[in-house]
Image (cartoon, rainbow, N blue to C red; front, side):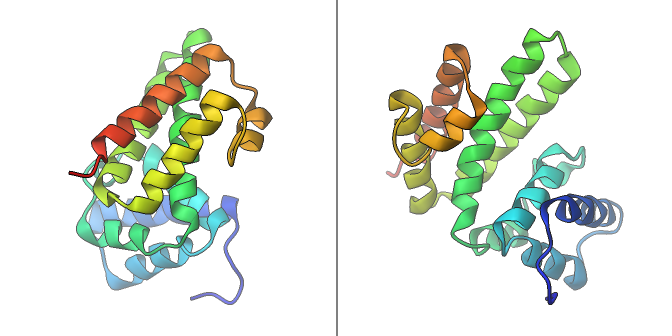
Amino acid sequence: MRDKPVGFEEAVQIGEEVLAHINHHGIDEMRREIIVDLLRTAPAARGFFIALLTDECKLGDELPEWLLESIKNGGEHIPDLLAKNLVMSTTMKITHERSNDAENAAGSEMVSRRTTGIIQALNQDITRTKLKEMRTSLKTKTGVYAEFLNRWQYDDQQIAAATSAIERALEINAQP
């Protein structure tokens, strides 16, 4: 573990390097510890998720158990980041489609799909709670995520798409 926490930009770079190594050589204890360290703080976890969710390697789609455990044990900030990532990627897909940017729209769709996959695989009460709080804020423009949503000034179409994405993730995570 490092003395000084890793910031967002540095975490994106470290995450990309670690994922490239894993993609070519497989996981080793050093790379696993780097990922665990990145997941410990919200800024570094955000950066790592950017690297993981946007990377073309299969790790983003086929989450191994060691990675799921690392994410699950990353801290209380992880469910919050997943809820925000799902909303942001869903709304950005619409933004890119409006700009006729098919490549970036496909990238945003991949991030949304992968985020939903992580949410589904984690299947945690705290994540369901964060998703429900996000859904409430999307529908009422109040609540825990009101400031986050207001900052991005999503329009009605984006809010509807984000609400649908949250509801799909909640359905996937419905407890028996």
